[in-house]
Image (cartoon, rainbow, N blue to C red; front, side, top):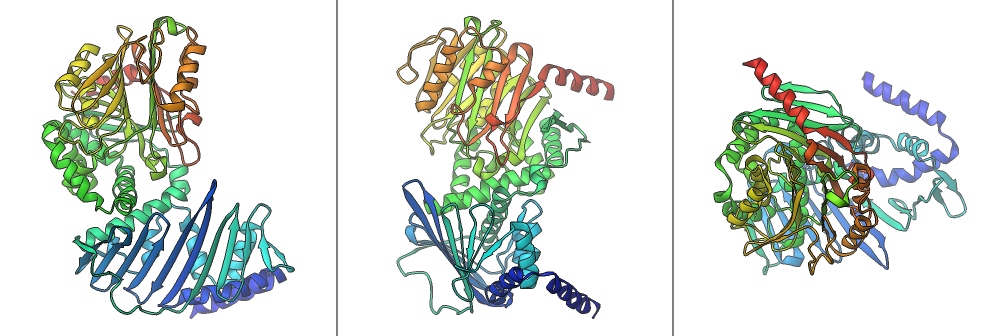
Length: 600
């Protein structure tokens, strides 16, 4: 009774503070919001997004039938999706592929698509949407009008009956229950109304039917949406995370100038456990990004269930993964409280990176030292930057190393070891050729096992390889570097100064790898500053446009000094536009060794 009285008093106060324009906005919103407060309703949205000379049109049709049933359709010129859910059945329909994935029976509520309470499951603390959701879904139209008027500073134009802000936003209500929003050429028209349950099946007779465990099916879609909201509308939990350090047995989390650095030492099992204990939230976000958000998009694009493709790849790759790496991943899975097979499978996620790399030394550099730059351009749109971590790893009986990577992932795509060996990778073609050592496993093995450049070259020559990858390997002890093209069938090494048909005329004391216009720009920069390259210039070599908009991380290795400089993307800027943080691998390893000696 007190809550009811309080609500009435609040509405009276708000009504008294609303000006005439805000009252008009409240009246316009009421017929749009009223159906959404019912147990059943329909919502139709038409979206037009400009893209250069063409425009993308998306149609969304949501029909909520009851507390456990709905139909959702999305249509685009390149894809189409229908989700049909009933109390005992879920269908994920891909009309363009003539395929439907379906599951029946009970489903785990935590990750279910059940309409009742779904917003709490899809909208977590990692997205800014969480702060606005109660106002939009629970508030009286007058409260929402006051909120929107204050937040967006909307002004009413009585002549064309539209609402505008101080920028490019235009909001119109063409008729009751309909709103049209325009901003920078993008338009969204949305209508709400009553729900009508469709009759008959939505699946034509000629569609292929693929049975999926219903819990897996609904988890794939729900967690994919949840993570997508975090990626496209992150909250301060992700943009300004808590930067408190932590220690567990065999591991420590530090923050160095805003970057996450994790120190791990011990047996593979101890390192895997410490990794999971220190980075549980970050690891789960990484897994959600790869498996659920990217995986759902990939399923829609390919028509194949992404987890099935990943399982098939792992089955072929697993015989080539060292037993100690598997033990480490098993311990990581236990610490994360996830299925071991899931952890093993996600760790062979096929990286098809479009990247750049270089190594310069001798006459090319200001002081003669070797500088090895590595540009990782890969899908910042799936949010891997939220789990970016620099790992300093000392495994019993192995060479210690720095691994610039991501929480939940034990392999390497960029790294340097204590023997002054540095490595960077660039993806090519040939996805699906998985009868060999996973690229990220081979990279990590090189850091754990190799003390010289010759040993790294021997490892690549004698190991079964996968797909097509390009690399830059360097040795700061001897000022040696080599470019590499590796496929399952062959491996080719390009020496400094060597002319190559794909890379152009050789540059003295330099290895330069990239593609297209990025290669031309990187070559030009190296030639223009030849003999002047130091830390500052080397970082500039990796700036835009050598780095792409999708630039996830940049690393500059100075292996002779045991130093590396790391830049990670955030949600608004690629890595090349973010500050570099200096990490002293030698000093960190000495510190870890000292702490280990004290415990003995």
